[in-house]
Amino acid sequence: MTTRAARTYFGAWIFVLAAVYYAFPGSHLYTWALIGYSSAAMVLAGIRLNRPARRLPWYLTAAALACFTTGDTAYNLLLALGRPPGFPGIADHRVQLRILRQGQLGEHEVQQLPLQLHGVLH
Image 1: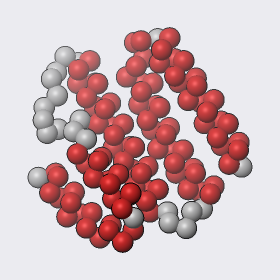
Image 2: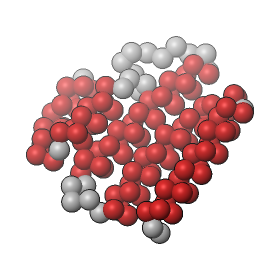
Image 3: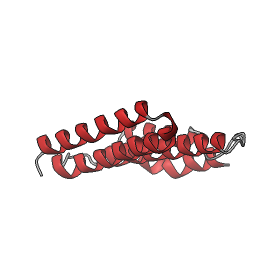
């Protein structure tokens, strides 16, 4: 598959998801999750198609998107079930922000990632 085809398919897919999101308010929980996870999948597809010299920052960006989507989906699900989300909890974005920051810093800083995540999770 070419990069152009991937962009076209992804753009069409996101357009359909956005249309469903706005046309059917009851589907927000599902369509929001599909938009987020599709975005993470597209970053992974972009890595495969474009083969950048530095891949790790892109992998970390995809992981951050997946964590962000998981947190938002968990938060929205808890609200839909009538349960207030706790803090800190699965809907907390601190882990996602740390992973994204590591992706932006580059590969030479990644050795510190486990220590930083340890400090966030405890």
